[in-house]
Amino acid sequence: MWFAGRTYQSWTNAGYNVQIIEAETPTTMNNCGIDISFSPIKVMGRQRRPFSETEKAVFYSHAKVLRLISRKTNPAIVLEHDAELVKPLPDDIFDMDITALGCTPKGDGKISQTPALSYFIRPNMANSLFKFLTSIDCKGNVDAYINDYMKKYGSNNKHIHHVKHLKDDNIGNTIEHPFIEE
Image (cartoon, rainbow, N blue to C red; front, side, top):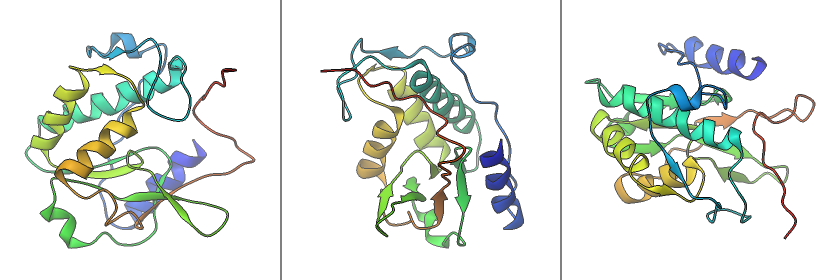
């Protein structure tokens, strides 16, 4: 909730109208009316292992939001709960169908792109991505598929310095990444 409050405030202080959509959880994701097929073993990413229930819930949450946007007429910005706006968004995002807006600062002064953290998307692209995500056998986390769409249909790194991934080692992480001995 600390992350969500700080994120909400950064966007509303900048004049954006933020609509909060309840995220899916491991206990609610199977009742949201969306069918997603996951491979038994996750093969995209650092480690070959089964998906955690939390990773699946994040996948369902993005699909839920994409379905909502696909029914609208105006583009939207999708924010995860820990996506703090740190500088004004440029007008040229409206020239895109989809583009990433955020990154994660690293300790060495470098950044890591985080495509699902915050992204601009048009309804037609949201519809296309939703249909894709619900028609494949998912082999990786949702951010990998969102990133692939950005590479193919938009820009996956031009606008990533506008939103910062909030982190606080004292609070911890909000997603489980199980470690499996190989």
